[in-house]
Length: 138
Image 1 (cartoon, rainbow, N blue to C red):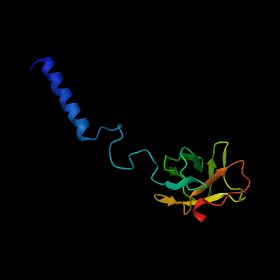
Image 2 (cartoon, rainbow, N blue to C red):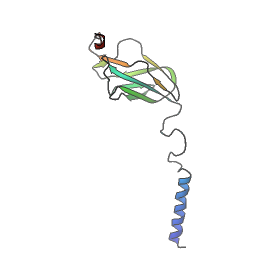
Image 3 (tube, helix red, strand yellow):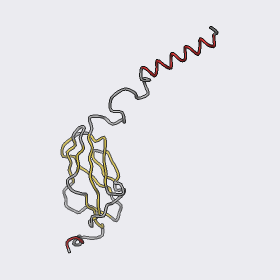
Image 4 (cartoon, one colour):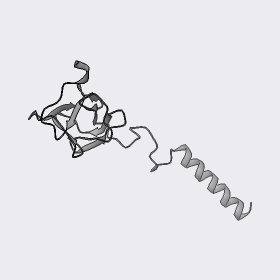
């Protein structure tokens, strides 16, 4: 057997061994896969304008982990550390604001679960002191 052929055989065996063992160091093997800590949770909800129109691109944050709402107003914050009574904050453009209730939005986050907010996060025009009657109450 020539040296060249011997070298090829060694390379093929080496590559086959890597494939069989799952190529260590390349993220193979069981487990969580996507890089998310399996001991974290998720927070889901909807952001909408006072007239129930969905609001896109609104940043929602829990425990310094953020996500933006999609075109339907939906958001999903992943990788949130578990904890009860965590404050949820909403970063809005200058023309929008949360109602001035004085109470922060609080959520309970559990490992390996999605906490879905019971109510939509409703925003209104920042320059309006009182909300007009919703159009569906005419």
